Length: 360
Image (cartoon, rainbow, N blue to C red; front, side):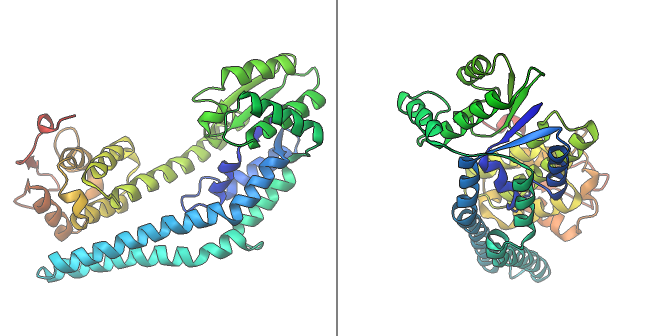
């Protein structure tokens, strides 16, 4: 039997803007659980945390994130009005693009209350399906006493509250009580590296688990797509969804860079996912690079952006060739890239800066 414990914060992805916990993944997990290929363990403490956070912390955190993005676009509009009105054609295009992005986030914000709190929302319907497919582990006084002793002694899983100790004791008791002599694996899906381990399961927890379950196996993964029960086709599909989410986050963080240093760091981060970027993504990057002064005034952005936009031979990436000429020219002017014509097949020389000029 394969047991899967999905940490409470993973369920937040059901509601997040960059949705990693997709509809297809919900259906797949429910299918595997209902066919008794896996058991998705749901300690009462985890269910309480999901329910509590859904109504409070996740809801307000999502609002705060969206408000920050909206404020960022409002600031961009102010900067645009100050610096670009004389370039009427470019000004109108950039203003329209910025207003469109701002409007999209405002619409998303208006839907948040329904998404998090309405039982009829698609997100809550998916959560309901998962709850129904899970194997629920009730609490009792004995479990709480064990968790309290573990927490008071400072034994892992490490946390500032007793919650993770109670979850761990619940999992141990359930598996020890219900597992047979057949091969058994406990798979923990969690990004809480302090509680469960960084990269691999905490050695203390691994030794304790094997001791109390008579040698059963345990492993830790940080992403849902790494659950080994999935077929290769299913895993590939989930990985693509997660990569798309990672890409969206990286582009958004770059576009909303709030300092010269963070703009450079965010630009370098784009290099890690450059093969995932589409023409639309590059358009967003160029627009942000010409409107966000934290990006175009930063000493740290020229080289990573040059590496991002041009291939190893120094020619413009093919994904950028459909972008409007005016936007491209505006970008090149901002960063000092010398151009004489539409650079679809023309090698561009960076006259202001080279890699050797960058102090990292």
